[in-house]
Length: 165
Image 1 (tube, one colour):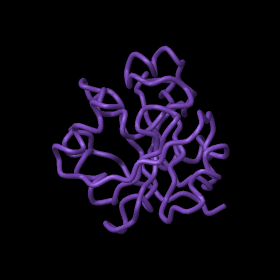
Image 2 (image 1 turned 180 degrees about the vertical axis):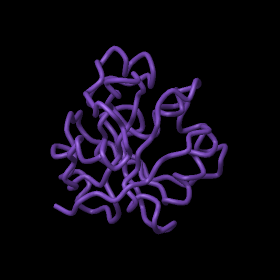
Image 3 (image 1 turned 135 degrees about the horizontal axis):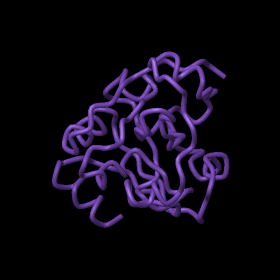
Image 4 (image 1 turned 90 degrees about the horizontal axis):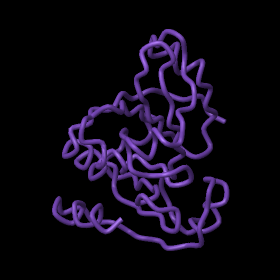
């Protein structure tokens, strides 16, 4: 987490860090973010069955996520399957329960394709909240800063519209 915070600081990204007990689901995290306005991220790390490509799906916490629908929207033949935790650790440097779009910082080979909910990038002033690579804290930053961070990591996300819950 410290290396990530240093990178954000070097990019002049202002963040809000909220510490909380260890959580393993977005539902368990939500009570600790009750005072925060913005978008809390839900993350799914998946693989493409046929091409063996890795994907990180990042959506607003209350979005309905249908992997089959997303695969169709992106023309991914064979659909998506959840990737093994060891692949997650090897690629993004985090374990289950700590998945975050900020972990692309560890993806030096750019082997993970980000898929972002369009609400994360539609308004540059929107605050976005996600884990800072540990599940004992949540970090918030403006969408514009989040996009600056992604540019710094050389990850070009695909954006899609998710169904409302």
